[in-house]
Length: 324
Ligand code: PPS
Image 1 (spheres, rainbow, N blue to C red):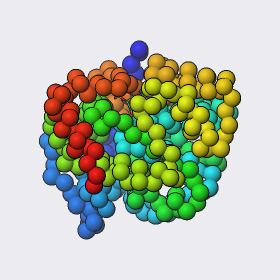
Image 2 (cartoon, rainbow, N blue to C red):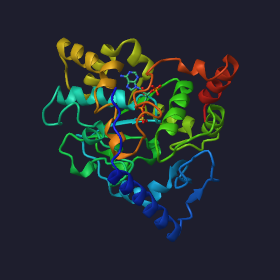
Image 3 (cartoon, rainbow, N blue to C red):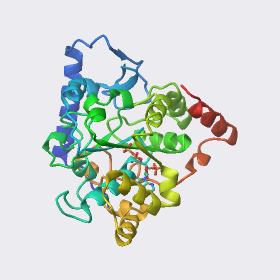
Image 4 (tube, rainbow, N blue to C red):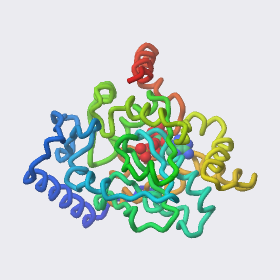
C-alpha cells in the first residue's frame, strides 16, 4: 500500500498549532476540577499532557479547545445517532455499518471513501482544528456522531432528546493491545514505552478516556435504552448485527442491503477504503506514513495472546470485569 507523507507546509502548520496550544495552556489558569497527571516520559510528544476531569482522563487538547463548554452548548436532536465506545473497541467498524444503513452506498451522506470523521464526526472536541474533523454543528439531519465520552459526561440532551445511542465493547485485552499501537502511531502522543508499561497505565486509569471499567459499565447499565454490541459479534455474525442495528434505528434493510453492508465492512474492504483507514492522516502529519502501519492494523480477536502470558491475560480480564 502506497504511503503518503505530510507536506512541509502541513507539518509546519501542525507543529505551529501544537506549540500555540502549549503556549495557551502555559498562560491559562487550569481550572480546579482539572487535575494534571504526572508527565510520562514515554510520550515522546512533549506537548501532550493528561488531566483528570470529572472522573475521566482528558488532555491539554481538550482543555485548551474548551471542550467542556462545547458539551454544555451541544443540543442533541431526536434524529441524532451516536456511536459511543471506549477507544479501540470497534467504533469505526460500527460507525461504518451505521453510516451504510442510513446512507446506502452514496447519497446525502457523502461518498464512502470520504474520511469517516467528515461523515461521522467526533462530539468530544469542539472545532477539532488539529484533527481536521467536521463540526457536528455543520451537519444535516440525521446527524451521525461518534463519541468516547463516558455515559455520565454526555450532554444531558442526548438522553432527553430521543436520540439513538449505540455502544460497542471488545475483549479488554485486545482493546489494550490496540490502544498501545494507536498511542505509538499518532504523533500527538508518540508513545514509546513498552506494552507492559502502557498496560499498567491503562489499569491505573491514566490513558485518555480512562477509566475503562467505569466507561464500559456506565453504558452497559443503560442497555435498556442503549444498543450494546460487541466486536466479537461483529466478527462472528455481522449480518445479525447489521439487522439488529437497522431495527434499533427503525430503518429496515433488505437481504441484499445486508449482504452489501457485510461485504463493504470486512477488514480487507475497510483497510482498502482510504476513508475508513484514515489515510488522510498521513498527509496531515497526524501519523508518520510507514512507521507504525495504518489505522486498520490487524483487526483480530485474540491478538492479546501475543502480548500477555495466559496468567497476565486472566488477571487483566478479572480486573476488567470487576464491578465498580
Ligand atoms: S478509535 O480510534 O477509538 O476510533 O478505534 P476503534 O475504531 O474503536 O478501534 C480500532 C480497532 O478496530 C479494528 N477494526 C476492525 N477489525 C476488524 N474488522 C473491521 N472491519 C474493523 N474495522 C476496524 C481496527 O483494526 C483496530 O483494531 P486493531 O486490533 O488495532 O487492529
